[in-house]
Amino acid sequence: MEGVLKTGKAVLLPGAIAALILYFSYHAIAGEQGLAAWGELQQQEEKLLSHIDMLKAERATLEISLERLRDRTLDLDYVEEIARTRLSYVRPDEILVAVR
Image (tube, helix red, strand yellow):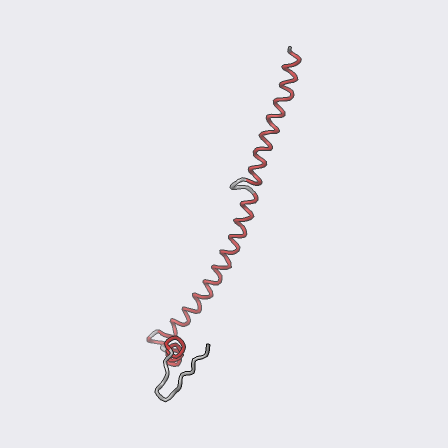
């Protein structure tokens, strides 16, 4: 009987430890916060950083445009360009040709 208990302990304890190691290894690799999820988060971070860079460039363009429209630095040619392109403004002696 003692031999069976020693054999059971010799098998169960390493088996339980191996099962715990497998369990935690699986969740470290494939779990919600594992390596696979970490890789996906890295890809998402890269996309967001490139989107931020694009938005910063757009903001810089808008700031330049805004500076050209301020009272102290008003650029009349730029105002006319905006009126012509966005509002389809034409002078009375001009003909508007729409191209699609």
